Image (cartoon, rainbow, N blue to C red; front, top):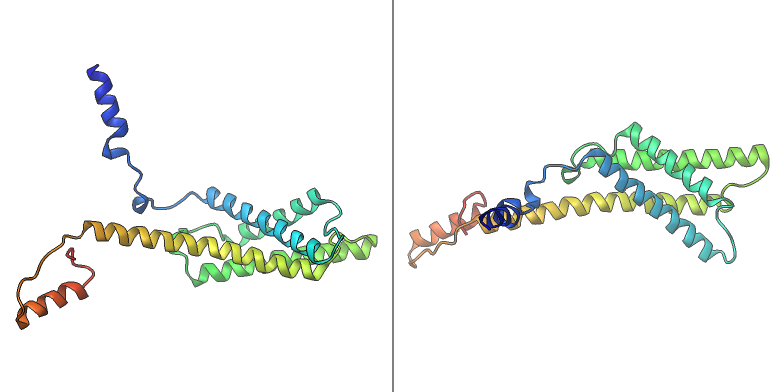
Length: 195
């Protein structure tokens, strides 16, 4: 029985709680998998919008091959520009630029492949080239950017929440100038552990 109590205290004790503010980074492969999922979603959303705007028009004649081509080209450019590398919650404008460059290059490459296939075989891989590629570029870039922005803001909120819970509440008693000056100094300095 004593063994069970010790095991339960270890499992359910405070040491095993997940503290999101202490998570340093996610592995690169997880970021890459999330990016691939977002690219897949952007491809589906773009083709869905084109199909709904142009009634009874299929965007791809072979969905499996086109999804594989689009995701493969995007993964290749993500690897070239290393958009999945780095800590997502510390994304900067350089990361944003690499993301935009990767998305533009992959969209341009898919356009070149589609047009060259049309010139060689006379058959379109994508029925509406420009509308699909424009919507795909916009949605994929926005989804990848919003994912990074969401992660950055989420960790900022978690960090601020943790800081506010670690601060000690103090009471400055008095209405003279020195009391007011102390209260202002405490409130204006976010590095102090007081609130």
